Amino acid sequence: MRPLVVIVFVAALIGTCSSPPPILDQVLETGELRVVTRDSPTSYTISPDGPTGPEYDLVQTFADELGVSLVIETVDSVSEILPILLSGQAHMAAAGLSVTNSRREYLNFGHPYESVDVHLVYKLGTGRPRTVEDLLGRRIEVMASTSHVDLLETIKAEYPTLSWTENADIEIADLLTKVAMGEIDLTIADSPDFNIQRHFYPDLRVALDLYVDDPIAWAFPKDTADTLLARADEFLIGADRSGLLARVHDRYYGHTKKYDYVGTRNFIRHFESRLPRYRAMFEQAGADYGIDWRLLAAIGYQESHWRANAVSPTGVRGIMMLTEATAEYLGLEDRTDPESSIFGGARYYARQTERVADTVSEPDRTWMALAAYNVGFNHVKDARMIVEWQGGDPDTWIDISAALPLLAQRKWYTQVPYGYARGWEPVLYVNNIRAYYNILKWLTEQEEPPADTDGEEPEETA
Image (cartoon, helix red, strand yellow):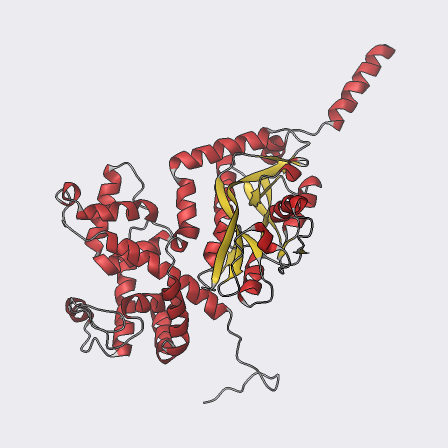
């Protein structure tokens, strides 16, 4: 082989070795899509039923479309994401990241799949900041290495005396808790986080919108080929057109749309004053019928505000507000007896769940069963029929919830087997229960386990 040919061959070989294949090729070759995300309710969490979260749902569907396995690496702080991406440990980040100029120096961002408002949050009664000048001298704390810091830096350029604390070891939920407890005066939160936490802390308020429609996108290492990014963009654009993005958003944030300050405060107060006398009954009924007792309790609160002697204008009675016909169907002699009502309601709800089509997955299955509990299963069937006529997906709650109100319109109820229904009521009913259920889960998770005073397991009793 001639020397020149050898040099060219070696140079080509070196060039080939020094240029790794595009990320998409690596993903397809290894059969793994490695994604870094945050351990957060707005990104990814582990529930008793397995991984969950809006980012998880999207990247899992994306991995399925690619035909590869999804490998998730979670971090506690946004500051940990960039090093993991740049080191090659992950192919991409799906963590609710804002698209900022400082991040663009190191990352490429894909098609924005969501936009959020950035709120300055304070506690009611502590004095609402109405202008930027009102921030001066206030105790402000934000998450480190986030777009919220960039916002404050921009403001500081005009107001040099503005100061704040950056915390790398805390989540936004913790910062909002600190505001609610009076430990700090202000923090910055994206609208999805705020909408969730305000149900737990009704005194949280938005002082100012620091940014409106802040784009959120997946992120990719900047010094790599854009093949995976391009494929991800195709997926997200398709997900938007197919309604997948809307369904994921409804699944995790649908219950946060309706917020009632007085109602939320009353609910938390009734959790402490009314629920204790019935809690054991809800827990036992839940265990007997394989239902989360907190969901049953949420139904009971929506129906009667946990009042055993409640009576509606239409004659339904008791904690679970059972009709006379339903009580007879269930074999109940006294609808106002708390135990009979709770166990009867649990059995009736379980029956509605069984009637929902097997093709419906959770949590949509639960929302449809709740709608059937309220309006009757046959009207839910009619709504499914309307969704099919409209070319939607009858196995998704977002489409069913849009069709149910149509049952009050002559154009539609005259075409379905079971006719007219006040179809907007089950939609409001489900949204309320979702909110109550979410608050109940949070309240019970804050409870401390019974103290073990001697450090030993209690002895069994006969």
